[in-house]
Length: 615
Image (cartoon, rainbow, N blue to C red; front, top):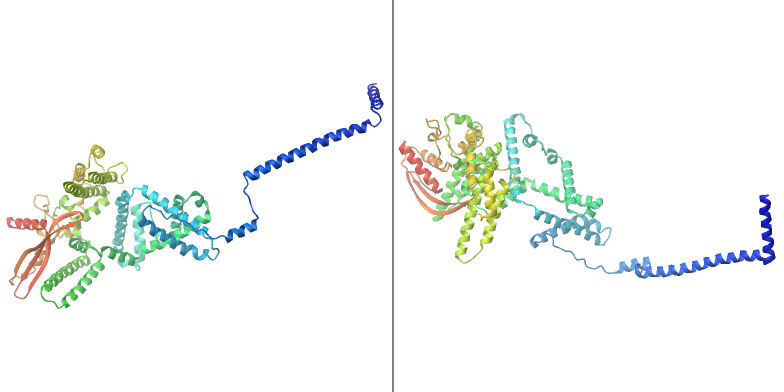
């Protein structure tokens, strides 16, 4: 019934539609719907197209540049003349440094890049990029160098490393000398022994592979260059592996490795030393001390041969008048040098350097050289410095010596300041600023909490000194209290001066000062060794020995007078120097020579004569 009702109502509706609109009404209805849909589609298409064209036109004029055809554009660019490239040549801010650095960059590009790059292209942009990168790295290096405090490194760490290297080398030489008869190749054995001693002293550091293997040395230099490039290059250039490896190889194999090989060449080192001392006059006492302290027989024989050659040349000269006196003085000086060399060689060959303790035992109690005299004598100070470095107390000794240098410098600066003020010139602030910087440098290097090694002294004194430095003007006596405490510490602490007198280095020091062979320096009966008053140079002993060699049956006439005086400055210390002309006449010959003495030598000689007369 339901289905019948639906079909009935549907049929009725169709009949009524056909009766009302006609038989073609259904076609008209479908056509109307089609036109409506098509018209909407056409309107939408036309509106979207017009709006899209307007938007594209806006984008074309607002955002996109005008472009031309690719190939003609490339041809046009290639036909253009190359514009001159402007390079900022400033690197460090100092023209005297920037110009040589620019030359180094230019030569590096010429030798390592241009010779192969120009076979590929004539475009200068690649070379410009490399040059700008190198300049950026140098600018960064300069900036970081200015921010670094170099004073502690050059005055403490570098000196300690160099001293450690020399101590390791000397210890290795001693071991080689002890077993010299059992070795076939001493050079190779010396290298192995050196690094064995280095491991013993450095504990955790050994550089044998880096120093002996070329492959490991190149690898170490590459790693070092990698670290430097990471610090100095821009991040974008460092991430470019091709660029980084290229620059790394140039730095390691083209610059650092040849530089190290040149600095390690013995001939270059000798020539450089000769160049450095060519314009400086060697101090007489320093030269003789070097001969007396030398442990190398080959060096002593070389000095002796050179002196002998010069002696033969002087004896071959045919002179007269005033020149003959000068030549005689030179001949006497050369004869004395040859005599000292022979004495030193004989001592080394006879083994006295090794058996100094046994030699000292033959004299009973040793002479006691006061600490204050050790600190002012170059020969004695060297032995005491070696001992303090062995015991770890070198910071106290270096602090005492640094304060002495600061006091002399401060006194000289203040005297100059006073003289300029009298002349109407005012530089008070500049001079005080320099003294304050020097005082702060001493404080930071030895007394501050960051100092390494640090001088162990009363914290109250250090705090008082820091307060004085911050609020008061620096004076030459600003470190006197702490220096006095450090001196007392070295004098009384069992680790330092008392133990030094029981060490083999003390005996060797006495032997170098010629204080073991003189009976007047033996210990006294009260249990304490006699003090040595004066400068222990041994020059007076040598002069007395020379006079004692004269046979007793000869009549000798001696005449000496001070022929000239002057002022000498040695290591910042100024003292008077006297030139003494000595005439010695005997029945067979007459000799004249000159010798140089300080006022302290006259005082020592006077004290020696007084002691001999009283005794």
